[in-house]
Image 1 (spheres, helix red, strand yellow):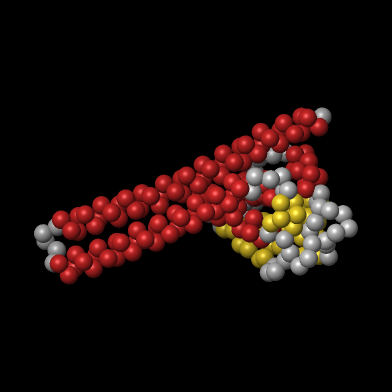
Image 2 (cartoon, helix red, strand yellow):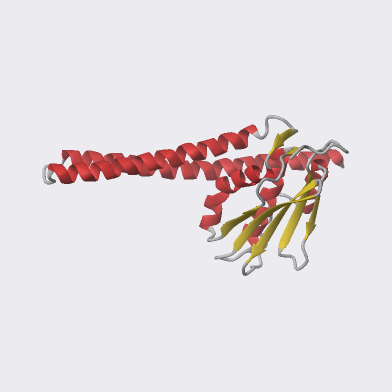
Amino acid sequence: MEYKKEHELRVSQLKFIGKVLSVFTHELNNHLAIMKESIGLIGDILSSQKSSVQHGLEESLKTIQSIENQTGKTSWLCKQLSSFGHRMDNPLSIFSVNESVEELLVLLNRIANQKKISFEKDFQENIPVIHNDPSKLQFLIFCLIEEGLRRLDRNGRIIFKTTRSGGSIAINIIQKGNFIETDEKGLCSNEISQHVINQLGGTIYQEEGGEGVTITLPISRHSGSEMAD
């Protein structure tokens, strides 16, 4: 039974990674297409004999600025993907919950935009880092995000709230908006979600009313030894 759960978890994690990479490459291609178009525009401006020198120079500078902005956005996205990949280097590491959630939202923002659903953040500042498995936490949060994207109608919202309570960090994921009926199956079952949270040493429970889910994680996996703030 345990082997079956682990096998299903590995398959689901591979699908999760594939989904993130698919979304990222689409976003990357969009930025590259804009840069290519902008470069072509500069060529048209410089080769045009109808434009005055001053007008051509102004338009070229605007286009160059646009290329610079797109390059910056693309570089930032690549940095987020690189960080996402390195989360899988070690099964246990010290990391910021806020940063790991933020990173995932950046990579999944395109899916939310396509469905006209917004991500909102309400992170408690200066919460301590935790000692756990960041890639499995991101996988679990992705499963909950995917559920919200399936259930929510257009103009819905998914709110992500982080707080500290004693020796634990809580991640509250709240769905707001109109809900729709769907037969579409999610990436992971409730059984797999429970299996993952057990491995993380935390808890997961549905909030009253069914609009939100709360994940709680210990600050340190070492019993009796809380990390310093």
